[in-house]
Amino acid sequence: MANLSMYGEMIRIRFLMMLAYRTNYYSGILIYSINIGAYYFLWQAIYGSQETLGGLSVMQMTTYVAIAWMARAFYFNNIDREIAQEIQEGKVAIEMIRPYHYLAVKTMQGLGEGLFRLLFFSVPGMFIIWLAFPIDFSNSLNVWALFFISIIFSFIVNTQINLITGILTFFLLYNTGLIRAKRVVIDLFSGLLLPISFYPIWAQDIMMFLPFQAISYIPSMIFTEGFTGAEVYSALGIQLFWALFLIIPIQFLWVIAKKQLIIQGG
Amino acid sequence: MFYLSIFFQYAAQYLKTRMTYRGDLVVEIFSDLLFQAVNLIFILVVFGHTALLAGWSREEIIFIYGFFLVPYAIFSAFFNIWDFNDRYIVKGEMDRVLTRPIHSLFQIIIERMELESLFGVITGLAIMFYAGSQLGLELSWYDPFVFILMVIGGAFIYAGIFICLASISFWSDSKTDIMPMMYNIGNYGRYPVDIYNNVIRFVLTWILPFAFVGVYPAAFFLGRTEWYTYAFLTPVMGVVFLSIAYFLWNAGVKRYRGAGN
Image 1 (tube, each protein chain N blue to C red):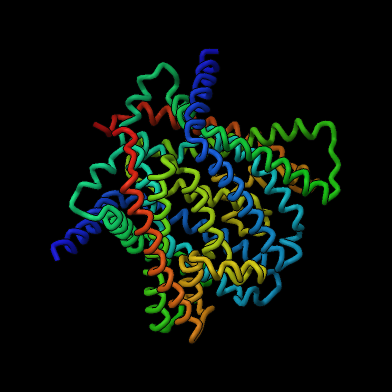
Image 2 (cartoon, rainbow over the protein chains, first blue to last red):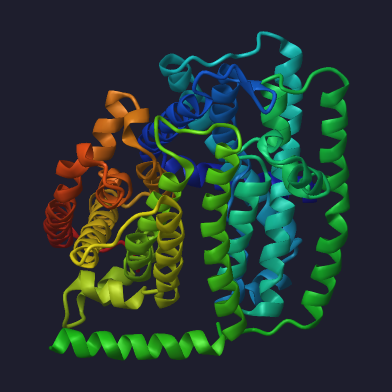
């Protein structure tokens, strides 16, 4: 169990590191609010006089936008870029001989960062947005609980995709292009910019077979109660499936990567 | 002249490094195209649900987006300073920059340029010509000149805002996630500002004037006479914001004490 406390420590240290720099987060909240505000008016204009679009009312859409961006603060991290940088600078050689699992450490650091942003950014940010815009918070405890389970899966799936992108640096050596492409794909296919139900049917059918919906669309739909009853549980099932399934390519790539590691200076 | 020759030497050096990792270069240009496609898809999907956005048609919005891409491409090719804080202040790299015989801001610009972003100019022009022909827009002899002026103004505004934000690092060296977020806010300048409420419209016009890198100048080419005053303010705003940024930067450098080891 010494192992577990070590990883716990990783989370704590990253959390404290972020805490040391917390002042700037308050300005971040302001910027986030402007962002969500602009989105809100954009959607108002898009709805025009229509009651519902893509199965969501204007009110639900506003809530969707707000929660999607606030949840993003929790699951988002840059560990793909960190891994790529450590590989390029040769630091990864030292990391590999340390008595821990490199990928687990990166995940824990991402979690520490996520927890920090959840507490110091999303929660106060959500409160301010709730004051400024007509947002519909569910008063059912059940919805909140399911939402929290769901964003934990968001974090897991998003982090796994970041790990895959990061590990690919071992093979590509220089990886900024892929990292950027991945971010764009996630923004579009995860439902952050547009709920998946807005897309044409053929596109929705494709996205249903991709892991990205597990990152943003599912938790946001649970929160806005766009999903109800059995839909919620099957959505959580999809998230669980991807969280387990993505372990396979990660493990596979990691084993090969260790074998053919090239240190580019250091 | 000295600056110009340094610039070309850095550019040549840059091309060499990029050619070393050719595979990544291709992926990067592809990812830029993907990014531009995403925004286009957003517009297309939205207009799948509505015919007009506050009285603007789909082709007009696409045209505005095409225009936006041109100054944005120039900005992202040369003003890659969104991670200035991390890269230069926290790691102490700024000390090295200050020992160089050219202006520190110029040094950072040439170190961090990403010339492949200039591809966006082509995409932008292609989108504009496509949307323009759909709308049946006529090209006058002065349009290309106005266009260049507007593009320079827009690129200056973007550069000014981001340099100002980077300069904040001189006063507070703590990490901030503002910069990536700014890229998102920049997107809102691409939609007709009359859809926003007064506060956001004011912010997008005078404080973070992203509307000048999208809807205002594009309104000129779309013949929306009600916005002409704003359209012609674009180059003025560009010069004003870049000057503010320049002074703020210099003041910041004076204050810089070094944070690295």
